[in-house]
Image (cartoon, helix red, strand yellow):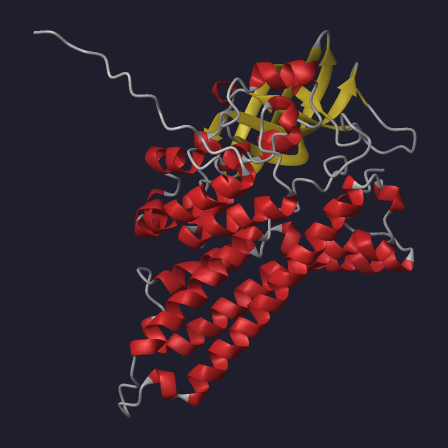
Length: 403
């Protein structure tokens, strides 16, 4: 019996903003249909990972230098909205996984080409310096334990923040700040700890992980203090934070659309009155549309403004105090407003909502968990207020302050 090879080429991964966004919207219904399974499995199934990979989401941050689509922060956020509209955990993992291309702006170009032979490799991990990196010839010996490694079960590279040491002494900057670098490690050198039993974002697989004495080459590490370019939209250390609002905005939009569609055909079981004619239902949906539309416009306006200023040659030092806090406050407001919108819809739906099988229940749990991320905490608001007053921000990194 003669066998023939299947010579059909795999579909090309989209590599423009329009095509990636269209691909993301195309998979949203398939993600929605698998949401219960994703949540139950506490991580993304392998075929779902490949579905997301095939949209081009993981390559969004790579610049044209490496053959990437070079999406703006606003375009990245739109794609994450679309994926999150289908499933919040998938959107969250895409949001983290696409950091591969953003980190490429801090890694040496030859290392980027060696580490990412394809642009569709995802990264996962924790940037906070929970590890210890001892300087050794050629690089660092890394040890530590990190938490919240969203998407780490399918990651092609694991990143881990660490303070560096030389001959046992902690390295410090000229101002006395401990030196912090991010280490990129192959997943086979990382031990995953099955700790992710969470209220929401259950399918994100945000497990703890440990690294024990792994040698990390110098060229596989970077500092946000040293971008490859000192100017441009990708030169400031908030680059990986900007696209985060896409996930809560997509989840809230999905919940609002579902409730609105249900309201078209639902009736009050006591009175038989159609929901579409009920003033309370009309008011709640109108309020939710108002709040979600307003916060979404604020997010995209701030992203477009930041990008255009930096693209025109402004440095972070050139930005006004209000420009510095604009994107971070719009981002935080997106998280909190999305949660409040879904909570309002949850209350409107009453007894039909509080079931584990309910999509509305899942969206609320996902957003409650999402809002425990430090990006949605009061420390962000305090940091903005402190910066505007000339005080001490509790979280200076979100303002791009590294010393």
